[in-house]
Amino acid sequence: MRNELTSLLNKYEERIIGQNTNLKLLLSAILAGGHVLIEGVPGTGKTQMIRTLSNLLGGSFNRIQFTPDLLPSDITGSTIFNMKDSSFQMLKGPIFTNILLADEINRTPAKTQAALLEAMEEKQVTIQGETYPLSEVFFVVATQNPIEFEGTYPLPEAQQDRFLFKLQMDFPTFDEETMVLKQVLDKSYETTNEEKVMDIEQFVAIRNEIEQITLNDDIMDYIMKIVRKTRESESIRFGASTRAAISIGKAARAWAYITGRDYVTPDDIKMVARPGLRHRIQLSPHVELEGATVDQIIQELVGSIPVPR
Image (cartoon, rainbow, N blue to C red):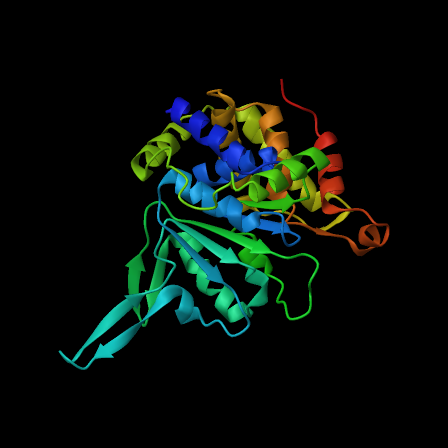
């Protein structure tokens, strides 16, 4: 199955230029069964990145544009009374899909954001007392804009912790951005109907193979030392949870598989530590006043822990 995954990644990198590391991290998170929060300024291709991946996987895809007036039932669905046969019918919402793009998730109130909590954690939704299972392959990829705060609602910590990764999208290099410009203006870039590289059954088979990737005790200890260090550091006000350690372990397995190995190394842990922790910790006020960033603190923290042999 590695050949199919390599083909998918190559095709993905051809379509989305200048985001190679983020593409691999996004694919790692989805293969690990996690959800992803993507933060970036408008126009960097966040939505296109998700839509392209969905097409390449051959799975079903739905997009929700989050707005201040969006209701929970607009996500999960609702029941209506059918006058014809005097019965209630359930109308499924867009959450019943394989990949759900929650676009600008921080533009809707907490009540609507919370409608995703049960689905993300338990892969089911409850509508008027009835529980409905979601697809075995179900992923939420949410985007948010970091520069427009007027009319936005920051994600609660509980919801952020449900995301395996938080990815940050920056502008590509000059050459990469010029290549995108040429593709679009020359009409050599089609935004829809990318040919799928694999189907959902193959995807599930790859995910099962990833669960067999070796994660030895020394690597597990290394993960726990990193996570526990976030709770002990004076630079961090609130540290990471146990779910963070589990997420890093799962993501590292997927990253190792994509890299072509059947075992996890300390470098795999370092690669997934920042996206796995940056949304799960809060810096101390004095550190924020000094201008330090979350990524800088995570890098210093990981670098201070001895690497297992």
